[in-house]
Image (cartoon, rainbow over all chains, first blue to last red; front, side, top):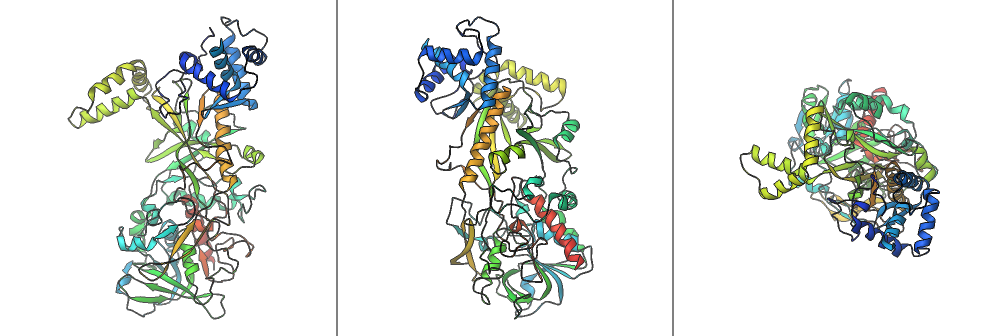
Length: 113
Length: 523
């Protein structure tokens, strides 16, 4: 299982409701992570096979295999990749939320694996 | 001194007057205060009295025939003090870039620079009873011991606003009452601006009261200071001599009606990734009766690169349920009763005991309510610039008011550039929030060319309808506020703004009135 990034804290209510509060974010709430993953796969249908997503993540996260989830450097790599995504406009909109491609793909991978 | 216009004899003409000011709102009262320092014989004509009255307020009636907009009966106030009687006091000068012509914004720019009006802004700051004329975040960071969020200043900038809703009517009533060269006539409605036979100067103003008496004034100089909707109405309805109205040979009067785009629902919302993030001055901090607040804006170079208008986003902090419950319980207990639904409040507090505890400890240790972790959601509001648009306009309607004067039709229109500014501004902010790891923005503004969200309204900031430009073919008034082609008619107030920026207009209205008073004294 992927480590929970400290900077991802809250759940996203992807069902369109107003109440997106009082809950954990992404990996602290596996249901939300799966929902983000589902939404990402629905909205970005190309190249969403697990291998393709993993390959893309490997590229954005650096040389460390994504599967090495216990690698303590992974949160830092995710944070750096996410910063780079936002800097360079690699942003996906899921139910209005602005997420980095990396974090959306991580959610998709979590759903698929 | 004050006089009731209802006591003026029907058919009479007031004594020789040097300057007549039409309207006693922020602009009119400022002009009167400044001109009281001289020796001229000044008359102020105010439609109302010292409190709202339904029949007077009804003279403001009109129709909205464009985008959804406020009822003109309620978006402004028609009594002494004008709309300062209900304004929120949000103040900031326009930015330097707002005065400049931007090639991607048609019709943008003023005929002078911000530096030309800086001293007038400083004087306006005092008249508005604000804190020191300091709008640099560095100053307030040091003074208040807070820090900006860590935005990259080459993209996102923090802008400072000051809030103090000075009611010009009550604040300055006594000063004007004591001024020996000022007469303020209440219940006095201007119904027509009459021109001399040569058409190059105003010869008289026709005045009526709701009681039925009518009289005229013949000032050497006239200043219209009746607001962004009423100034063009007065010019347009004075159409007996010239069918198109006064100063409307170029069909500019009433056009370029601008607002600030106020997204009444948040343009976006986000959660802090770190709940210990300090709110700092992004929530108002009281400084001797003036609230100081930071808002989020774009670096002007980014706006230029993106070819969008001025974007500004105040944020509102929605506190956690536990903190809200503590406040509710405290309020109830202080009034000697238990709150309704006590069980829910107790559950909220227990569930967030760690956060509530840290909040309490933080307040105790720092003695500062602006530090601590009470935050649940940060709502990103938007108050952005509307670009000048000749198709957005105020015209005369076929309906008439109680004085027999035509009412107005407001055809408020926005452009794709306005929509792109809102959307792109929020996108750039969301990307920076994400890059910093500060939070993730949930965007509420649809992507162009989708429909405008219904939540986009104006802010009762009515601007642009008698715009300023040195070229008479492109503006109604010149750089001094004098109406092109008329030697003795001037206009004050936000109707002369050729570009409105994103800052609330009152401070600029007052600064321009100070500037105009200086000019009138020099004539």
